[in-house]
Each structure stands twice: as structure tokens, then as C-alpha cells.
Length: 162
Image 1: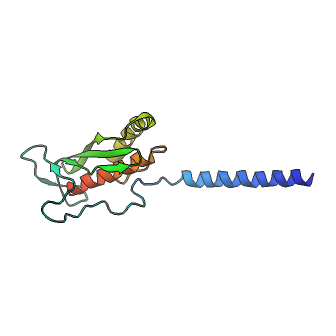
Image 2: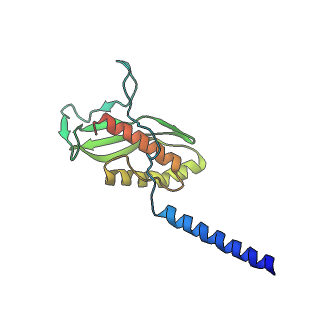
């Protein structure tokens, strides 16, 4: 009888701890850029690799961004980020100094990865447009895609001067 009572007490305490941990973790979303060092690439000479701006028109100039320094209008490709399930690369479209769209140039491929990306990428794009930055939350179940997306977007925004 004592074993049963002790077992029930231990089970009750274990369940209570799990519920407490789950409730605590659900209240604080994690940024896709959390724990990642700076993604800004520092050129190392004239032939340095990195994100390159692709102007949308020859007349595109620099326009002040709200709350930021000057940002160039146009299309800016982010770095290709190799994830566990394949490369991720995005292109940021900047108009009037604001992020107007994000186009996915490369995404993870194959089986379950394609299914996850078809769900996660539109959410990540909507979150980036809302935040006007790469500081976006990770999509549950798509951690690698979310992190790669955010890093590539940050590189594109760095190239745009944002």
C-alpha cells in the first residue's frame, strides 16, 4: 500500500512539473536569431564575397528608413545558409526604406522538409514583414528553416543598409 501511495505521489509531482515547464516555455517565443552571432559580413578586400544588392531600377537611390539610417531601395539577396536539411536563401525587396516583400530563392528540399517549408515559409515572411526586420520567432517544427531564413534575411537587410 505504501508503494502505491509513493508511486501516485511521485507521478503527481512529475506531471505538475511538466505542466509548469510547458506553461513557462509557451509564454516566451524564441527569436530565430537568438544565440546566433552577428550575421553581418565584413568584406576582406575588393573580391570579398557576400550579399550583393540588385537594384530594381537604375533610378533607385537611397531613401531614409523610418527609425533607421538611409536604406537603398531595390532587391537584395541574402547569403545562402546551409542547414541540416539543405540551403535556405531569401531576397529582400525594399521600397521607400521599408521591407515590402521577401522572396524565397532556395529552400530545403525533399519529403518532409518540403511539407514543413510549405507551411513555415509563408508564416516567416508574414512575420518578417510585420516586424520589418529579421528578428522573427521560430516556427514550431521548422527550427532549421526558421534560423536559416532569418540569417539570410539579415544578410539581405545588411546589404540594403538596414
